[in-house]
Image (cartoon, rainbow, N blue to C red; front, side, top):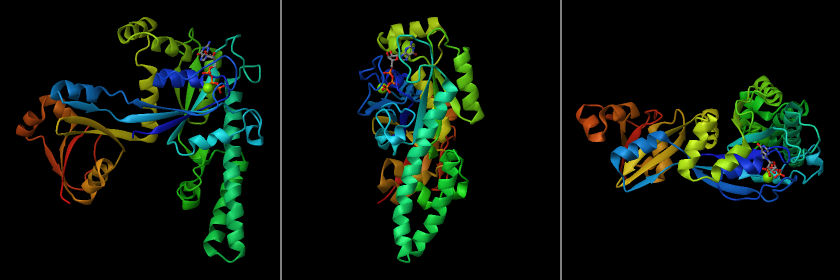
Length: 364
Ligand SMILES: Nc1nc2c(ncn2[C@@H]2O[C@H](COP(=O)(O)OP(=O)(O)OP(=O)(O)O)[C@@H](O)[C@H]2O)c(=O)[nH]1
Ligand SMILES: [Mg+2]
């Protein structure tokens, strides 16, 4: 599992269109709001140039990329927390995702209705953020009710947790997302257990018009400015173009992208932005005839990385034999790198680097 990303936004902003392009699974995307009712979950292989380069050299029997999951849910409207539109119950489907991508409509199209009739990316972002905050407040309130009952019968922990929840509540009530809470509150058990939506890392996806691929329009500029003012990373995608590209076969896709001047495909850009946001890195293993990519948070020690593969490997960890990716590139093979003294034998505390090719030795 790489990481999972929930796709949110107002209705009809292109969430399902982008989800389809990303996952190439044909879920319906129609020109009327609230097309998506049940969430759609799609798993995609993380595109990885290093993995391809390794596969070219090693010629393994099997190549297993790391996987990322996208969850496409129904659009939110102003008042969703009070049941407007389809309400906010769909947010439950993204409680457990690791990151959230907010799709913002930056395209004009008279054929595609906008819930509030005017296209105002910054205002739309505020509406969605506010609904997420209100949903989080509902979670906090529920937990506060429970803890007050316990506190009344003298539960000390419950009293303490109530203090924390009160602080979180007033922070949210002031209109701030939970991700801006101080570190101490953010890391407290009470807050972690709530799986607050506004605590999740957030990416802003600007769905731009097919004639505005560089996002130079006023709409795109307004959205970008707004995202920057909140220190949020943006990814520019044209849902419509991506949907068209997905319908072409692989060779034509590349040609069409080049003709449009699109360098990296939007899936890669979105995933790479997500990786940066979450501070994730990739390492590789070759076991038997399988070459495999694994995702871990940056600064993960070798013993924990081994546990990513199998709990036995963590439990019985002996050492890690590590080849840095640059050395692999330099020598072209593990054997040559080993002969040149570039294979590092590392202990359990070794911090795995992005691109490392690792062989774990363990004994259980
Ligand atoms: N012109 C234009 N139309 C787009 C673009 N992206 C999506 N659309 C159209 O907008 C309409 C709504 O797109 P969807 O992807 O279904 O929107 P959604 O955000 O999933 O909507 P809900 O599921 O109702 O919340 C469809 O007709 C799409 O073809 C775009 O970049 N440009
Ligand atoms: Mg949809």
